[in-house]
Length: 71
Image (cartoon, rainbow, N blue to C red; front, side, top):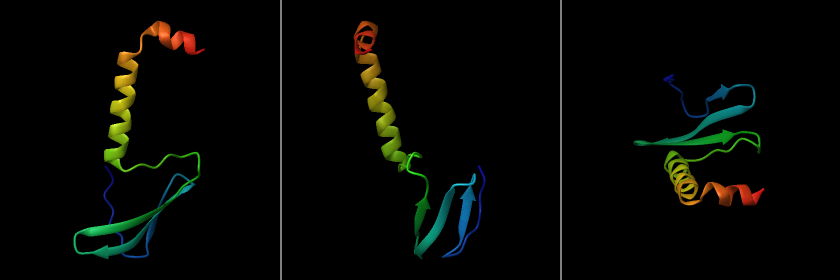
């Protein structure tokens, strides 16, 4: 993990096309802005984990034949 120190209004770049900007700092909360291409999904971690869990449940409940029938 890379740990950086940024001030309000400062940014960091990921690859050549994702910019993360510190928008506001109030107490123990930091508001960030993320500028990324539309094809790059951006989720809060708890939402991402929920999506993964739901996908796993669907894959486990669907039989292999059911998946073959989709195509």
